[in-house]
Length: 244
Image (cartoon, rainbow, N blue to C red; front, side, top):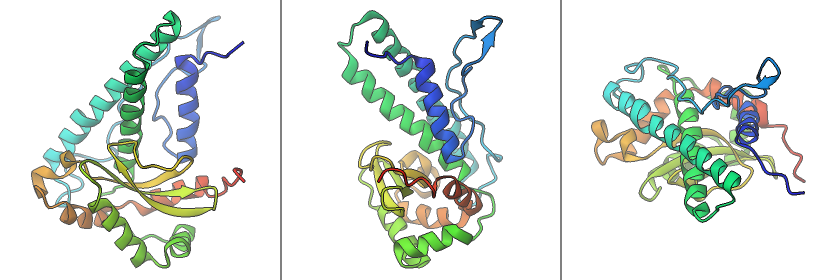
C-alpha cells in the first residue's frame, strides 16, 4: 500500500533537514508531541525573529529596508507556505489533485523563500569577521583562494536575472564548495547541495537604499557576513559524503 505523507511528516522531515544546516527551529511545529494519549494539533510554520535589531546592519542595510523585508516579505512566504501545505493535505484527503501543479509550485517557491531568508538573516552580523579555519581552507581548495571565491560570488550574485539569490553551498558528491545562482527562490539549483551562505538580490532587499545599484549592495554585503555562523554550518555538513 502506497504511503501517504501527512503534513506532520513533511514538517518533521524539514525540521530534521534544518538541523543538519544548523538552523534549529526553522519549522516550528508540534512534532511528535502529545496531549495525554492524543497527538497535539500540528503547529504552523512560524516566522523566525531577527537575530538583531532593525538598525543593527546600518549603514550597509538600512533600518526601513530590514523591517519591511523581514516583517512583510519573509512573513508573506511563511504565510503562503502554510497555505500550500494545507491545500496539499486537503488534496490528499479528498483525492482531488486537479490543482496539484499550482500548489506544488507554491510549496516549492514559498518554502524555498522561507528557508533562504532564514539563512540570510543568520549569515549576517552587525560586525563582519573574516573567514578562517576549516571553512577558509575549503574555500581555498574549491576556488583557488579567498579572493577568487569573493570575485566569483559577487559576480554570480550581480548576474542573477531578475530576482533571486547568490549561494555558496556544500556539494556532497565531490565534497566541494560551489557557487550557484538561484532565480526566484528555487530555480537553477543542484539537488543535494546544502546552502551555507546566501545573498538576497531581490530588489526588495536593497532598493530603498541602493536603487538599481545592486553591485554596491553586494559589495557591502561582504562587510557584514557572519563567517563564524557560515563555518558552523559547514562543520555540520562537511562529513556528509554518503552519496557515492
